[in-house]
Each structure stands twice: as C-alpha cells, then as structure tokens.
Length: 282
Image 1 (cartoon, rainbow, N blue to C red):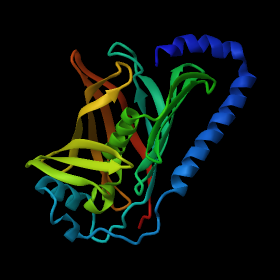
Image 2 (image 1 turned 30 degrees about the vertical axis):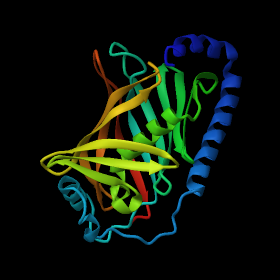
Image 3 (image 1 turned 90 degrees about the vertical axis):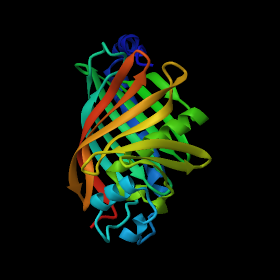
Image 4 (image 1 turned 120 degrees about the vertical axis):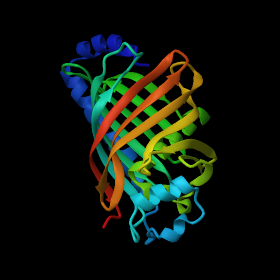
C-alpha cells in the first residue's frame, strides 16, 4: 500500500489546503468515535488485584517475569493510553525511515486497541494511519494528508488474527493482562521461553515469549502472521528494551518490530513510549 504514497502526494497538493483541513477534521472525528466505542465497551467494573498466588501454575520463566514486573496488590489494568515517538519504514530495506508520532488506546476486557499515528513522509506531507482491533475485528486505514486513501483494509479472519496478535505482543506494556485470569493461556517451552495463546470472538493469536537472564521479555515471535504486501504468511518478531517502573509495573519503554523474510529481516517500526497511563492505577 505504501507505494501509493508518491502518487497520492500529487493529488493532495492539487486538492488544496482547504479540502485537506476539512478532511482532517472528519478523520479526527471518526477516530475519536472509534476510541469512544472501544472504551465504552470496556469492562472496568472490577476490583481485581494481582496476588502472587496467581502465578502458581504458570511456566517458570513466565512466573519469574510477572513476579518481577508486578507488585503484590497491583490493581489489574483495564484501559491504557500510550504516547509513542519513533520511526516507520514504509517499504523494503532500502527505504528511509520516516518520523512517527502515535497515540494508542487499549482495553483488556475485551482485548482491543486503537493506534492513531502520524507519519511524516516529506516536509508538510504526512499520512494519518489508524490501526485497530475493536469488537473482535481488525481495521487499517491510511490517508495521505487525511485526504487520499492509501490503505483501507476491512476485517477478515487474517486481519483479525494479525491485530489480536499485535495486542498480545503489546500487552507487555500492561502486564496484568498477561495473567491467566485475563484469558491468556501459557504453555512451557524451556527455561527461557513460553508460548502465550489468547482467543477472542472466535479468533486465536499465539506468540512465543523469550525472556532475558534478568527475567524481562526480550522478544516475542510469531511463527506466522498474515502480510498484506505479499498476500502470504511470514514469521514476525517484536523486541522490547529499556524497562522502567510505570504506575507500579515494570514495563519496556523501547520497542521494534520486524518481518522475518526469506531474503532477510525487515524492521519496519520502532518507537519509544514517552507517556503511559494505566487505569486503574495506584
């Protein structure tokens, strides 16, 4: 889809600044409504807190990780808001990285998110990208200068599974969501890895979590994730680093994701979490 950016730029310039501003307001309103729907459907009526007894039946590396990431009595997170600053690569390994700013909202029960990003492709030329998993369905919308559509991906079994997989990977930013009581099932692999599986609305996502010697999540790996560019499946990896205590939980503040393709790894998103708000919080 990103090959349409250059062609779309010409069309947007011709459309005029006024049209762009009107379309931007429309897109912002639509995105705000999507976030409102996500949060309205969230189950926030709970006083559940983390107890170390919750970890008894988990694989050893998962038990050590959550024991270090959470404190006794930590309220279980229901909704999350993050601010991200980083870069996105909209092509192959020769494509330059483009600056990115994003706001992302999550809900835990049911699992869902809305990622609202602005990617700068050139001076005064940006793309607004909204990636979401809400109501058990995945969506992707991208518009150049909020006007020219460069991506409009509707829900499908492949899209839904890919977006639920993204949610599961990014749950490291609110680790109470990885407790068994939130629907995640853990399967032991070895002393430094375990498989997590989450099912929602008939869609299942599964990832292998790899842990460091310090019992932090180093990376998550999907054996196969649908890749729209090739209309095929490929392995996918997410990396996490620079753990900090935020709202009583130890969470990573840096991340990068990549496709693991036959001709080499292709990193395409990397960012730092500059702000994170967990609800409820201490």
